[in-house]
Length: 68
Length: 138
Image (tube, rainbow over all chains, first blue to last red; front, side, top):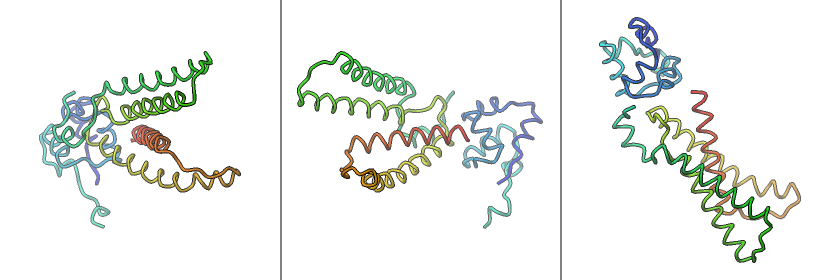
């Protein structure tokens, strides 16, 4: 699953720490999501989308591999 | 930082300050053993066994507190890392249990049964080690 978290964050001039605090996770978790090492839970994905005021699909998109 | 309700309900972990308590217990138990050795205190075999048992109990409890207490920020990713660490620990423990007597035989010693404290210490060490490694690479 790919994501545009870094782009969305940059658009809003937000640091990883800012976002982490708003969704109650560690900065390391945000970093892992951005580098696609960790796939967030539905709850966390929804919380992130809410912070950015966009739909979840605008940040997280499924890839071909995810259907295998 | 306020922690997620779902994370808190899944993980039955000790509060973060238990890490310090655990470390204190480990250091104290090691210090007591070293002081006893250094001062060459004369004790009977029975006393020696009792003290050894107490040392292992305190040491294992200290390791357990370190392993089973929350990080400063506990979230869903740390829970996943914990799960992976438990899996890795389980796997290595099985191999350790099987391979250790073989190592004894190769080294020319008589293979003896592993004690429960030894296995528990190995498991706790492996868990802490793998958890730290995973967290660093995350």
